[in-house]
Length: 312
Ligand code: CP
Ligand code: NVA
Image (cartoon, rainbow, N blue to C red; front, side, top):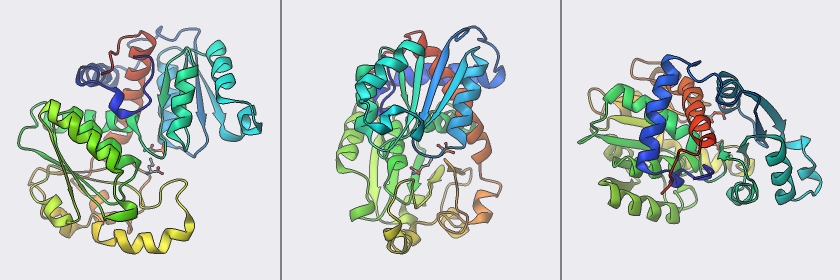
Protein backbone atom coordinates (compact mmCIF):
# COMPACT_ATOMS: atom_id res chain seq x y z
CA UNK A 1 0.00 0.00 0.00
CA UNK A 2 1.58 3.29 -1.14
CA UNK A 3 -1.13 5.79 -0.15
CA UNK A 4 -3.96 6.29 2.32
CA UNK A 5 -6.58 7.77 0.00
CA UNK A 6 -9.73 6.39 1.65
CA UNK A 7 -10.49 4.84 5.04
CA UNK A 8 -11.45 1.67 3.16
CA UNK A 9 -7.84 1.32 1.92
CA UNK A 10 -6.83 0.07 5.39
CA UNK A 11 -6.94 -3.57 6.39
CA UNK A 12 -7.62 -4.62 9.96
CA UNK A 13 -3.93 -5.59 10.32
CA UNK A 14 -2.87 -2.13 9.12
CA UNK A 15 -5.07 -0.45 11.71
CA UNK A 16 -3.76 -2.72 14.47
CA UNK A 17 -0.16 -1.90 13.51
CA UNK A 18 -0.88 1.84 13.31
CA UNK A 19 -2.64 1.93 16.68
CA UNK A 20 0.19 0.00 18.32
CA UNK A 21 2.82 2.36 16.92
CA UNK A 22 0.71 5.43 17.70
CA UNK A 23 0.45 4.32 21.35
CA UNK A 24 4.27 4.16 21.42
CA UNK A 25 4.52 7.65 19.94
CA UNK A 26 1.99 8.89 22.50
CA UNK A 27 4.26 7.60 25.27
CA UNK A 28 7.45 8.80 23.60
CA UNK A 29 7.03 11.21 20.66
CA UNK A 30 10.77 11.15 19.89
CA UNK A 31 11.25 7.38 19.66
CA UNK A 32 11.93 7.42 15.87
CA UNK A 33 13.79 10.71 15.40
CA UNK A 34 15.60 9.62 12.22
CA UNK A 35 12.77 8.13 10.14
CA UNK A 36 12.37 11.34 8.13
CA UNK A 37 15.85 12.78 8.76
CA UNK A 38 16.76 15.06 5.81
CA UNK A 39 13.34 14.41 4.31
CA UNK A 40 10.34 16.68 3.70
CA UNK A 41 6.60 16.24 3.91
CA UNK A 42 4.39 18.52 1.80
CA UNK A 43 1.11 19.43 3.48
CA UNK A 44 -1.22 20.95 0.91
CA UNK A 45 -4.60 22.25 2.08
CA UNK A 46 -7.35 24.01 0.10
CA UNK A 47 -9.66 24.02 3.16
CA UNK A 48 -8.96 25.42 6.65
CA UNK A 49 -7.52 23.20 9.38
CA UNK A 50 -6.44 23.61 12.98
CA UNK A 51 -5.81 20.07 14.27
CA UNK A 52 -4.81 18.22 11.12
CA UNK A 53 -2.31 20.87 10.08
CA UNK A 54 -0.70 21.10 13.53
CA UNK A 55 -0.71 17.31 13.89
CA UNK A 56 0.89 16.82 10.47
CA UNK A 57 3.59 19.43 11.02
CA UNK A 58 4.50 18.27 14.54
CA UNK A 59 4.38 14.58 13.54
CA UNK A 60 6.82 15.27 10.69
CA UNK A 61 9.13 17.24 13.01
CA UNK A 62 9.10 14.47 15.62
CA UNK A 63 10.23 12.00 12.94
CA UNK A 64 13.16 14.29 12.13
CA UNK A 65 11.66 15.68 8.90
CA UNK A 66 10.74 19.14 7.61
CA UNK A 67 7.09 19.95 7.00
CA UNK A 68 6.35 22.21 4.03
CA UNK A 69 2.89 23.73 4.40
CA UNK A 70 1.29 24.93 1.16
CA UNK A 71 -1.99 26.82 1.11
CA UNK A 72 -4.57 26.15 -1.59
CA UNK A 73 -3.93 29.40 -3.44
CA UNK A 74 -0.14 29.04 -3.46
CA UNK A 75 0.38 26.37 -6.13
CA UNK A 76 0.27 26.78 -9.90
CA UNK A 77 -2.44 24.10 -9.71
CA UNK A 78 -4.89 26.95 -9.08
CA UNK A 79 -3.78 28.53 -12.38
CA UNK A 80 -4.35 25.49 -14.54
CA UNK A 81 -1.26 23.31 -14.01
CA UNK A 82 -2.45 19.72 -14.01
CA UNK A 83 -2.72 17.46 -10.98
CA UNK A 84 -0.46 14.94 -12.72
CA UNK A 85 2.33 17.51 -13.28
CA UNK A 86 1.97 18.80 -9.71
CA UNK A 87 2.18 15.25 -8.38
CA UNK A 88 5.42 14.62 -10.29
CA UNK A 89 7.00 17.81 -8.96
CA UNK A 90 6.01 17.20 -5.32
CA UNK A 91 7.28 13.61 -5.64
CA UNK A 92 10.64 14.94 -6.81
CA UNK A 93 11.10 17.31 -3.88
CA UNK A 94 9.31 15.61 -0.99
CA UNK A 95 8.97 12.19 0.62
CA UNK A 96 5.25 12.25 1.43
CA UNK A 97 2.23 14.42 0.64
CA UNK A 98 -0.61 15.15 3.03
CA UNK A 99 -3.57 16.65 1.20
CA UNK A 100 -6.86 18.24 2.35
CA UNK A 101 -9.26 19.33 -0.37
CA UNK A 102 -12.81 19.08 -1.69
CA UNK A 103 -12.97 16.33 -4.33
CA UNK A 104 -12.00 12.77 -3.50
CA UNK A 105 -11.20 12.24 -7.20
CA UNK A 106 -8.46 14.93 -7.00
CA UNK A 107 -6.82 13.07 -4.10
CA UNK A 108 -7.07 9.78 -6.00
CA UNK A 109 -5.46 11.41 -9.05
CA UNK A 110 -2.62 12.81 -6.92
CA UNK A 111 -2.05 9.34 -5.48
CA UNK A 112 -2.02 7.73 -8.92
CA UNK A 113 0.51 10.24 -10.27
CA UNK A 114 2.85 10.45 -7.26
CA UNK A 115 5.73 8.14 -6.48
CA UNK A 116 5.60 9.11 -2.78
CA UNK A 117 2.92 8.23 -0.18
CA UNK A 118 -0.18 10.44 -0.41
CA UNK A 119 -2.36 10.79 2.69
CA UNK A 120 -5.95 12.05 2.60
CA UNK A 121 -6.31 14.67 5.34
CA UNK A 122 -10.05 15.17 4.59
CA UNK A 123 -12.16 15.39 1.47
CA UNK A 124 -15.88 15.99 1.00
CA UNK A 125 -16.27 12.19 1.18
CA UNK A 126 -13.88 10.87 3.81
CA UNK A 127 -11.55 11.63 6.74
CA UNK A 128 -9.34 8.58 7.35
CA UNK A 129 -6.69 10.11 9.63
CA UNK A 130 -9.36 11.33 12.05
CA UNK A 131 -10.64 7.80 12.52
CA UNK A 132 -7.21 6.51 13.53
CA UNK A 133 -7.15 9.04 16.38
CA UNK A 134 -10.73 8.15 17.28
CA UNK A 135 -10.00 4.43 17.49
CA UNK A 136 -6.82 4.94 19.49
CA UNK A 137 -8.93 6.90 21.98
CA UNK A 138 -11.67 4.24 21.97
CA UNK A 139 -9.11 1.52 22.57
CA UNK A 140 -7.53 3.42 25.47
CA UNK A 141 -10.93 3.75 27.13
CA UNK A 142 -12.52 0.34 26.42
CA UNK A 143 -9.58 -1.92 25.58
CA UNK A 144 -9.40 -4.38 22.69
CA UNK A 145 -12.53 -6.39 23.46
CA UNK A 146 -15.43 -4.39 22.06
CA UNK A 147 -17.95 -7.23 21.90
CA UNK A 148 -21.40 -6.11 23.00
CA UNK A 149 -20.49 -2.45 22.54
CA UNK A 150 -22.35 -0.03 20.28
CA UNK A 151 -20.72 2.92 18.49
CA UNK A 152 -23.26 5.56 17.48
CA UNK A 153 -22.84 8.65 15.31
CA UNK A 154 -25.45 11.43 15.19
CA UNK A 155 -26.21 14.21 12.71
CA UNK A 156 -25.12 15.04 9.18
CA UNK A 157 -24.44 12.01 6.95
CA UNK A 158 -21.18 13.53 5.74
CA UNK A 159 -17.47 12.68 5.31
CA UNK A 160 -17.23 11.89 9.05
CA UNK A 161 -20.20 9.53 8.93
CA UNK A 162 -18.64 7.70 5.99
CA UNK A 163 -15.31 7.34 7.76
CA UNK A 164 -17.08 6.31 10.99
CA UNK A 165 -19.03 3.54 9.23
CA UNK A 166 -16.06 2.22 7.25
CA UNK A 167 -13.58 2.22 10.14
CA UNK A 168 -16.15 0.64 12.48
CA UNK A 169 -16.69 -2.06 9.87
CA UNK A 170 -12.93 -2.67 9.62
CA UNK A 171 -12.79 -3.00 13.43
CA UNK A 172 -15.69 -5.49 13.46
CA UNK A 173 -17.78 -3.13 15.59
CA UNK A 174 -21.52 -2.62 15.94
CA UNK A 175 -21.78 0.79 14.29
CA UNK A 176 -24.86 2.97 14.10
CA UNK A 177 -25.49 6.20 12.18
CA UNK A 178 -28.52 8.27 13.17
CA UNK A 179 -29.11 10.81 10.40
CA UNK A 180 -32.04 12.28 8.50
CA UNK A 181 -33.15 10.66 5.24
CA UNK A 182 -32.57 12.37 1.91
CA UNK A 183 -30.03 15.13 1.29
CA UNK A 184 -28.19 14.65 4.59
CA UNK A 185 -28.14 10.85 4.73
CA UNK A 186 -24.81 9.07 4.15
CA UNK A 187 -23.96 8.05 0.57
CA UNK A 188 -25.64 4.72 -0.23
CA UNK A 189 -22.52 3.39 -1.99
CA UNK A 190 -20.45 4.00 1.13
CA UNK A 191 -23.10 2.32 3.29
CA UNK A 192 -23.05 -0.73 0.98
CA UNK A 193 -19.25 -0.82 1.12
CA UNK A 194 -19.31 -0.54 4.94
CA UNK A 195 -21.80 -3.43 5.13
CA UNK A 196 -19.58 -5.61 2.92
CA UNK A 197 -16.50 -4.85 5.06
CA UNK A 198 -18.50 -5.42 8.28
CA UNK A 199 -19.67 -8.82 6.99
CA UNK A 200 -16.06 -9.91 6.54
CA UNK A 201 -14.96 -8.66 9.97
CA UNK A 202 -17.90 -9.65 12.16
CA UNK A 203 -19.30 -6.13 12.53
CA UNK A 204 -22.75 -4.70 11.88
CA UNK A 205 -23.87 -1.46 10.25
CA UNK A 206 -27.17 0.03 11.31
CA UNK A 207 -28.80 3.18 9.91
CA UNK A 208 -31.68 4.90 11.65
CA UNK A 209 -33.63 8.16 11.81
CA UNK A 210 -34.33 7.58 15.50
CA UNK A 211 -31.69 9.26 17.68
CA UNK A 212 -33.00 7.77 20.94
CA UNK A 213 -32.86 4.23 19.56
CA UNK A 214 -29.30 4.94 18.36
CA UNK A 215 -28.25 6.28 21.76
CA UNK A 216 -29.78 3.39 23.73
CA UNK A 217 -27.00 1.50 25.55
CA UNK A 218 -24.32 2.98 23.21
CA UNK A 219 -20.74 3.03 24.47
CA UNK A 220 -19.74 5.90 22.17
CA UNK A 221 -21.85 8.89 21.20
CA UNK A 222 -20.15 10.75 18.33
CA UNK A 223 -21.10 13.88 16.43
CA UNK A 224 -19.69 16.42 13.96
CA UNK A 225 -20.47 20.00 12.91
CA UNK A 226 -23.67 20.48 10.97
CA UNK A 227 -22.17 22.89 8.43
CA UNK A 228 -19.09 21.30 6.90
CA UNK A 229 -16.41 23.17 4.97
CA UNK A 230 -17.79 23.87 1.51
CA UNK A 231 -21.46 23.32 2.44
CA UNK A 232 -23.69 25.92 0.72
CA UNK A 233 -24.70 28.75 3.09
CA UNK A 234 -28.03 28.91 1.25
CA UNK A 235 -28.98 25.58 2.88
CA UNK A 236 -27.99 26.56 6.44
CA UNK A 237 -31.47 27.32 7.83
CA UNK A 238 -33.06 24.22 6.34
CA UNK A 239 -30.16 22.04 7.46
CA UNK A 240 -30.25 23.33 11.06
CA UNK A 241 -33.95 22.53 11.24
CA UNK A 242 -33.65 19.03 9.77
CA UNK A 243 -30.66 18.14 11.98
CA UNK A 244 -32.06 19.60 15.24
CA UNK A 245 -33.53 16.25 16.45
CA UNK A 246 -30.04 14.68 16.17
CA UNK A 247 -28.33 17.14 18.54
CA UNK A 248 -26.37 15.47 21.34
CA UNK A 249 -27.99 16.74 24.53
CA UNK A 250 -27.83 15.61 28.15
CA UNK A 251 -31.22 14.07 27.59
CA UNK A 252 -29.90 12.01 24.63
CA UNK A 253 -26.80 11.00 26.65
CA UNK A 254 -29.07 9.64 29.41
CA UNK A 255 -30.02 6.74 27.08
CA UNK A 256 -26.39 5.67 26.56
CA UNK A 257 -24.50 2.99 28.50
CA UNK A 258 -23.35 3.88 32.02
CA UNK A 259 -19.69 3.90 30.97
CA UNK A 260 -20.36 5.75 27.69
CA UNK A 261 -18.07 8.44 26.29
CA UNK A 262 -18.76 11.47 24.09
CA UNK A 263 -16.54 12.06 21.03
CA UNK A 264 -16.31 14.86 18.45
CA UNK A 265 -13.69 15.34 15.72
CA UNK A 266 -13.88 19.16 16.29
CA UNK A 267 -14.32 22.00 15.50
CA UNK A 268 -17.50 22.04 17.62
CA UNK A 269 -20.42 24.42 17.64
CA UNK A 270 -21.81 24.35 21.17
CA UNK A 271 -25.56 24.81 21.12
CA UNK A 272 -25.88 23.33 17.62
CA UNK A 273 -24.80 19.68 17.22
CA UNK A 274 -23.86 19.34 20.92
CA UNK A 275 -24.87 20.88 24.22
CA UNK A 276 -22.01 22.65 26.04
CA UNK A 277 -22.61 20.61 29.20
CA UNK A 278 -22.04 17.39 27.21
CA UNK A 279 -18.90 18.36 25.28
CA UNK A 280 -17.40 20.03 28.37
CA UNK A 281 -18.70 17.37 30.75
CA UNK A 282 -17.25 14.25 32.43
CA UNK A 283 -17.96 11.84 29.58
CA UNK A 284 -16.23 13.91 26.93
CA UNK A 285 -12.85 12.65 25.63
CA UNK A 286 -12.42 15.34 22.97
CA UNK A 287 -9.01 16.63 24.08
CA UNK A 288 -7.38 13.22 24.22
CA UNK A 289 -8.99 12.46 20.85
CA UNK A 290 -7.66 15.72 19.34
CA UNK A 291 -4.11 15.22 20.61
CA UNK A 292 -4.06 11.68 19.22
CA UNK A 293 -4.27 13.27 15.77
CA UNK A 294 -0.51 13.82 16.06
CA UNK A 295 0.39 10.39 17.38
CA UNK A 296 -1.66 8.61 14.70
CA UNK A 297 -0.42 10.77 11.80
CA UNK A 298 3.10 10.16 13.09
CA UNK A 299 2.46 6.40 12.99
CA UNK A 300 0.98 6.69 9.51
CA UNK A 301 3.98 8.64 8.17
CA UNK A 302 6.34 6.19 9.87
CA UNK A 303 4.82 3.03 8.37
CA UNK A 304 3.89 4.44 4.95
CA UNK A 305 7.40 5.79 4.34
CA UNK A 306 8.77 2.34 5.29
CA UNK A 307 6.30 0.58 2.98
CA UNK A 308 4.91 -1.46 5.88
CA UNK A 309 1.15 -1.18 5.32
CA UNK A 310 -0.48 -3.92 3.25
CA UNK A 311 -3.87 -2.42 2.37
CA UNK A 312 -6.76 -4.71 1.63
N1 CP B 1 -10.85 17.27 13.14
C1 CP B 1 -10.18 17.98 12.21
O1 CP B 1 -9.85 17.49 11.12
O2 CP B 1 -9.91 19.26 12.58
P1 CP B 1 -9.26 20.41 11.68
O3 CP B 1 -10.28 20.76 10.62
O4 CP B 1 -8.99 21.52 12.62
O5 CP B 1 -8.01 19.88 11.04
N1 NVA C 1 -17.43 17.45 8.38
C1 NVA C 1 -16.47 18.45 8.76
C2 NVA C 1 -15.30 17.82 9.45
C3 NVA C 1 -14.27 18.78 9.96
C4 NVA C 1 -13.09 18.09 10.59
C5 NVA C 1 -16.02 19.20 7.51
O1 NVA C 1 -15.82 18.56 6.47
O2 NVA C 1 -15.91 20.42 7.57
